Amino acid sequence: MTCPRLPVDDDHGSWYFAVQVRGLDGQRQRVRQGGYTDSEEAQAAGRALAAADRDGAGTGCTLGQWPARWLAAKDALRPSTRQGCATHIRLYLIPQLGRVLLRQLTSRDVNGLLATLASRPSPTGRRLSPATVVRIHATLRTALNAAVRARLIPVNPANGAELPHPRRPHPVVWTAGRTARWQPAWASRSAASEPS
Image (tube, rainbow, N blue to C red):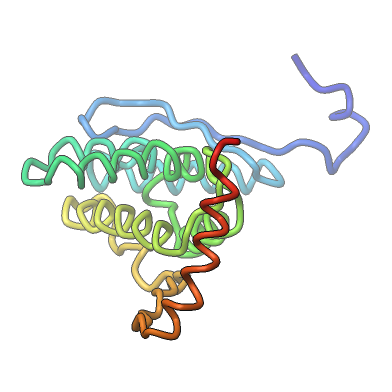
């Protein structure tokens, strides 16, 4: 089905390309990408991807495919670390950047992801803490380091990302004066929460 605005509005719509490239398993797969302003730009991007396919398997690998494969191959992770990485991949990396080809991922994409994570509510409805954003970045950076070692990408675009700075709580010594000020406030709160 075609959009009725395409014949009358030159600025409406975008161009796509589709090429066959080798996936991580060496099998051919179709990669389709769009958002190009004209056919020449789309054809040039398609030719560049097809030329990169000559370098080896994995050219068509996306950020949605690689981290899950990387995590499955990691045998020495503690169960809690594996679960945390899997959560980062499922809730944040795949929804935000899953369709981006590894070879086309840029540091700008990574910084955009981190800025989005730091500013918007998470899927659970709460804003992510800076420490959580740093941990999500660590998962992405580690997975991309493995992609560099596997020669899927030449450099890791997550290195040197602009991270939020987690604020650590400032410890305070409980002096007799602080304790004396805290106890009445605590007593009044606990009295107000007791059932009548």
